[in-house]
Image (cartoon, rainbow, N blue to C red; front, side):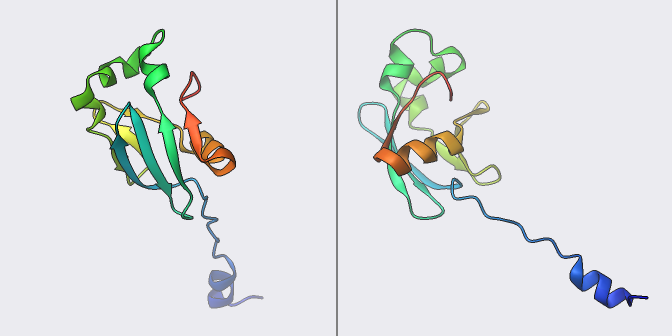
Length: 109
């Protein structure tokens, strides 16, 4: 029979840290964001064509430059966000930036 302390010690769960947790975001000219991830990967997210060519849907308020510049890192979710529950999928953004140094925002946000 195992002692309670042995069972408790062996039942610890290791949490794997994902690399796509966003740690900083900065708005740049021309509706672009500079994003940095927890593993140090950094790149630009170009949102101009997404916002201004066709329907931006719930992101339409970000056509206002002042609203766009309200961008912040949602520390709890580890993603780029704006007031009004708007956010970008960090995993897809990370993969594109890791591969090419940038992401051109599209319909899969």
